[in-house]
Length: 234
Image (cartoon, rainbow, N blue to C red; front, side):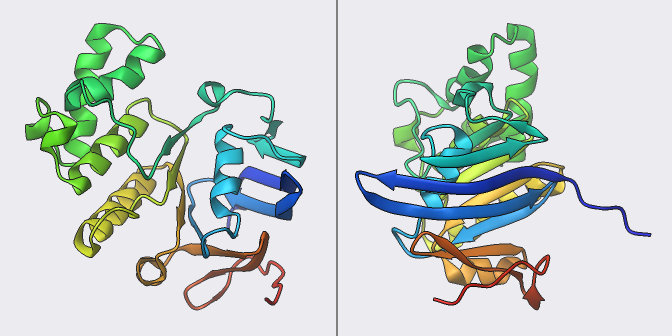
């Protein structure tokens, strides 16, 4: 008998109103442990807003976010067991690759010995072992995104959020970043990606949540609907 999947994230009736404009209209969504989930849709559909609510960067107007059975809406971002990779990388220009990644460990007061062990591990994971002394301005866009990914991974989050991680990249680098995220998922991390890149999403063979105008319009994997969730036509 197949073991029941564990719900790790639950969005319950999430509504978000920005100055009278409702951008999320009562989102109900469950994400399961060790899933790779893509939020897909056009600009303005609400996908990034939903991700930022999960990350703790904005609060919903209504609703609840449940993480592993606990309501986390009152927790600040640094207290949530997840990390976010942003489209604009947000690297410190005055720090080299090693120090950019180590910064995340210093924030949570990891000892130097632990940092010296952990940073090379994630550098190897993202394929940048030889670039540890380089500064952001010396890196390509794809390499900068890998540094941002390594910084998000260095503290071993249970959930990794990626907001348009391929938005500034060419097709080759976009595919490589998505495959890296897939490898992260295979190691046991739940991954939630926001994108509008339909071509890459179709090739990934993962769960896809399509959004439009503040609602979920489909929840599927390649080959059919997923978890038999409701479908709302556009």
